Image (cartoon, helix red, strand yellow):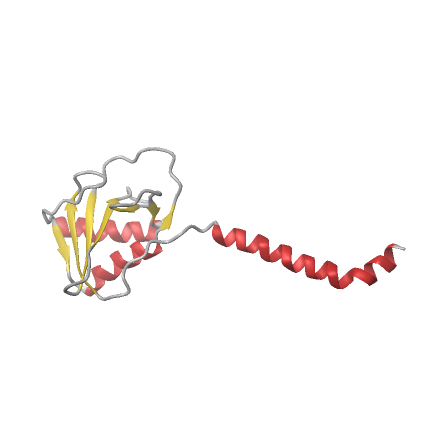
Length: 152
């Protein structure tokens, strides 16, 4: 009887298995977190300022980056950072980042909490309400190297 049932409904069981596998896979992919986005335009300059606090953008330029290598590091760090759920209030950011594009396009204002050596860094849109984004340790290390070498 069981053998007859398996033969009769083998296609349906296989179909249900495939559907359930797809649902589980989709759930795992969603767990990776939403990524930060920037305009799909050429970035002309990255400006860093000492932060005044969450929700504020310091206009007093501490350092800027116009070379393509530094811009690529900042762009990659931002675009690969993934959204995290937070259960508390964040401390004041270390830096404010202004991502500047060609003339006439809006500037992205982003807060940066630079991670300690071997830690991830935290990014957040200045007007974000839903939570911070974390970089990889590798991108955090590259950001630290660029910022610290420019301070000298």
